Length: 271
Image 1 (cartoon, rainbow, N blue to C red):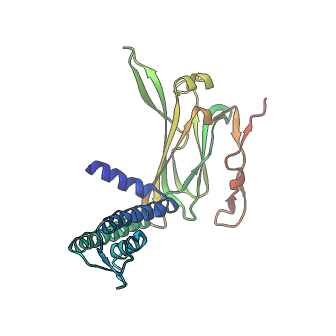
Image 2: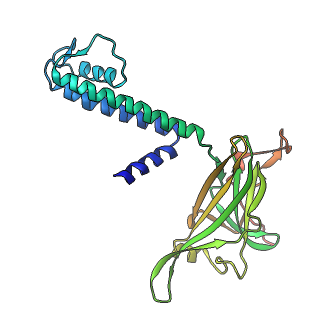
Image 3: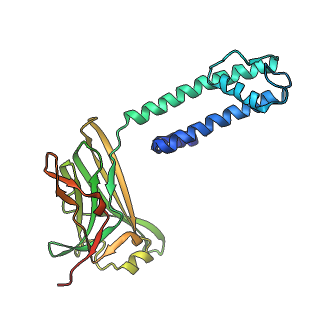
C-alpha cells in the first residue's frame, strides 16, 4: 500500500496543471459526496436542512470539509457530530497535502525539452547517421547539458533465451556548454554501431526503440533538470533529413526557432 501511495504521489507530480487540478477537484467532490450520503441516511442529522434533501446534505458536507461553516446548517445528532469531527480532520489533512503537492510542483523546475516527432536515418558529412533533434522550449538556457542515446531491441542469447537488450549509441557530441535553442544529436552508423546493417524491417521485427535522456542545469533556478524521449520503429524516417528551423531574429544569438517546421523531415537528394 505504501509503495502504491508513493507511486500515486509521483504520478500526480508528473501531471500537468490542466490535468492535476480537475483530478484534485473530483477527489474532493467524491469525499464530500461520501460524507453527504452518511448525513443523508441519518434522519435529522443536519439542522436547517430540508427533509430528504441530498443537496442540503452535500453542501453541508462541502462546508464541513472546507471548514467554512456559514452557520445556516449545523450538526444535530451524535452521529452527525462524529461525522463532522472526522470530515473536518480530513479537510485539514487534504489542505496540507494539496499545499505540499502544489509547492513541490512549483519548486521543481522542468526541462521542457521538445523532441522531434521523428528520428532520422540519413547522412551527415557523407557518413550514414542517425539524427535526433531537440529544442529548449524555455526562455532560460540549460547549462552543462549531457545527452545519452540507447537502442532497445529484442534479442536471443546463445542459450536461446529471448531478452530485451539495451545498446548505448555513441554520439558525435554528447555535451554542450549551453543548450539555448536547438540541438541535433548524431550517431554515426559504422561497423562499430549496433545499427550497422539494420533495416526498417529488421528493427521492426526486433521491436526496436530509441531512448534518449538529457540532463542539465536550468540557469533560472540553478537546479538539475531531466528530460527523456522515445521513438519506435514507425517513428524513424529513412533516407531523410530535418528541415531548417533556425531563422534570423531577436535574441542574444541573433536567431530564433521556427517551430512550424520543427518536426519536418525531407527526403535526401539522390547523388
